[in-house]
Image 1: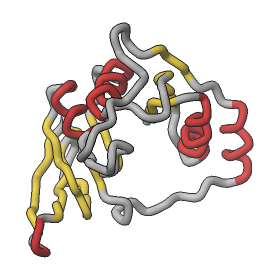
Image 2 (image 1 turned 180 degrees about the vertical axis):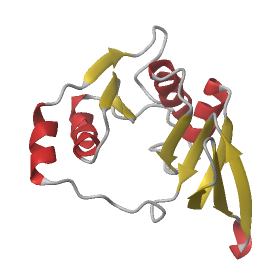
Image 3 (image 1 turned 180 degrees about the horizontal axis):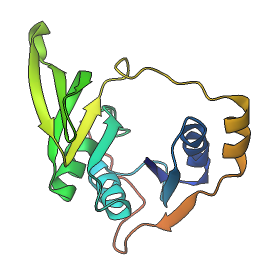
Image 4 (image 1 turned 60 degrees about the vertical axis):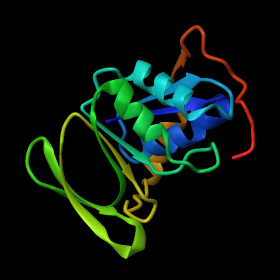
Length: 160
C-alpha cells in the first residue's frame, strides 16, 4: 500500500502514522498548506498514475467540499464512489459499497477497479500501531516529489 499526501514538510507526520500502521511506501508531494482541490488531485494523480484503488476521505480543505476524490477520479480515468459509509469486499477487483444520500436514503454500489473511493470518517476502523512499528516509521524514508510545473501555491479565495 502506498500513501500519498500533498503539503509542506509538516504533513510528514500523517505519512509516518500510516507507515506505522502498515503502509509500505509514503510519498509527499511538496506544496502549500492550502491548495485548490483540482491542484491537489492533479498532484496525487501525477504521484500514483497507475493506481488501481485509491481510498481517501470525504473532506477537502477548501471549505469541506469533498471535491478532491472527484477530480482525482477524472484525472486517473477511474470510476468513483463518493460518500461511502460501508464497504465489503466482493471479489478480486470489486467491492460492494453503501453510499449515503440526502434524506436518510442509501444507495448500494458495486465498484470495480480502477476506482477512487471516498469514505466518511466513521467508516474506517482505526488501527493502532505497535511501539516497534512506530519507532521504525520515525526513520522510514518519505519520498518527496515536487509538484508539476505550472501549478500555483496560492489558493484563490472568494465568497462561497
